[in-house]
View 1: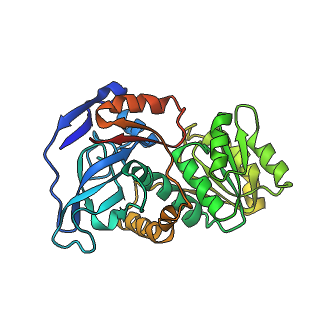
View 2: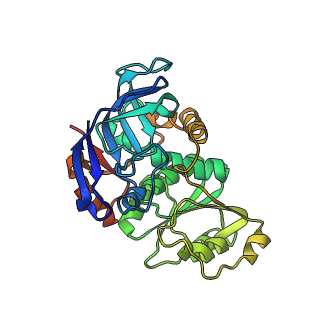
Length: 328
């Protein structure tokens, strides 16, 4: 197989396309010919040597999701056959042409979706689904504030909240991203370069605040996040792109509001935990793609051998939705 391998930690130029032995599926696994995979922010950290892979996964081949075709089936696998179009959440090694995947991590590619679209679903939609539905128990009609609304996780979270008729607020650094997010169901866009999101949320909600806040920024947003929460509000942290250390934190408001703060990450969970999330998502959410209720937002597509260019593009932070790598 071919794979994009990180020669050593550093910039995008550290990627090299190498020929490696094909993976051999175990009795509960299938062998998938990868048609497309997707970039995630974690891949940038992994390229710099700051995001170690789980045990048994190579650190030098990123890739947290993929879509492709089954070309081999383990002896104990039930319900999957050669030729099936599938997608999956991965612990890594998606930047390749082949991969062995446990049958419980597989999901069918929804009818009508391309491999490029399908490859952009597992990581961001499972992250948003876990954060908003499982961790925060978002219910119909609540108020949701979604930071980085133009990111992969952001576009997924906006759509999931809109599907529940929630009032949605979203932050982004450009008006164009916010306008695109509104086409996905965002009600109120907030440009963080010219607006304070707390002030907007509190004004529009009449001082009530947001029931659920999904944050990928971290420390710089802590105080305004807490002050934006409604009584019994839930704040879930799925990243810390702006920094993970607080010099001082005002905690009194959390008690007054009886608020809940949770952190979540999929990659560090056990196989059983991840498989449970995958199967729940496949049952509850995946059918909405075939019905046209949810979309996979693809910003740009690169061939695998242009992985360095894809990483450089992601670092510009201009993308709206997912950046995809495809195999010919």
